[in-house]
Length: 226
Length: 218
Image 1 (tube, rainbow over the protein chains, first blue to last red):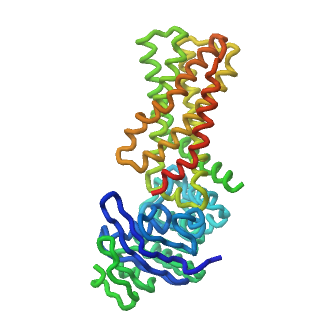
Image 2 (image 1 turned 180 degrees about the vertical axis):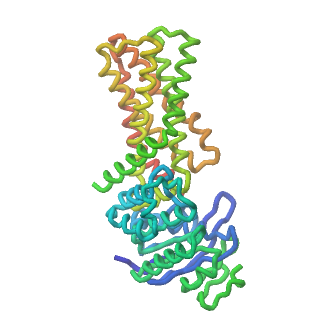
């Protein structure tokens, strides 16, 4: 049961010692929509996503995911959101199937969901092989399946297209669409504007950790976001 | 119930990964055996020296074991993925602790066998006390190890901190292990040392999970 908009950030900020990685970021992701995060390297996109995913605590401001505070109710936030990071998060010594079964068991999801996702990302023929023998693209697909089987209300994706072929990119699009159809929200950070723009409703441009502009995706151009 | 399942799932995963790669047990076990051999050759192989040699070798090997299992969890972003699964992060402490207890016991068995061969140690009737000592020591060292491993991952050069922190913190376990092993081999009285191990374990198993959860917060 969702309470309020999927994601709300109010004056969110994070310092690492004296370095300000993020400051004064506020936005709302309404139900069924996707916010794109754009900006150069070091703009604070990953920091912002990691705060929303509860991997990092904010040093200022606050954020709520499905009405749950990311600091005070971090355990409950993790029940409704999933983070697709730039690392695969899979164990090389385990097979593809074992990796997904482990993820299902940890998340309290049925193993049948893991098997369905294994099929969906096209890894059934290599499901018995250790993930260490997979190519980068295959590990990314496995990672996508690991996140997909959680059926999150909020998807936080950091450069989700990296290492994927066109079919893999199609799987990311499907996952984003599914979350939106369920009435959830997506926050997606990317430099791949051409692939991301059709998925986004609004775009937030960050620079040096500060929000620059926020607007509709359709009106934004790749050049203006660099 | 779900927490127990998560703990078991995580421990089983750690043990399966180690069972396939042996990348923590083989280097730490080899190093421990080397320490036993060097100390045996330089200090003499009389059976009364065996308890001290066993526990010093075990403590040094345990440092390597904890370090390697921690490093492995940081590879490919698996630690972050683990931290972001739904549920309490205290479950992660218990899962890692359970796996580490099993690995430390395996290490202890290997070291113990080396004592029998090199020092001619005869167990006699003291084996139940030795088993209890090994189990209590493994529980305590594993709790400290998991807690310190959480510190390591968030600190640059954290792997250097492991021996600096684990050995002094685990000193009561080391001392109790030596005294209890001596008592078991000579059929002597255990004295207060079982109590020392029990208090050590209770302390770290009580404060370990919430501290672990607090430390892994970014």
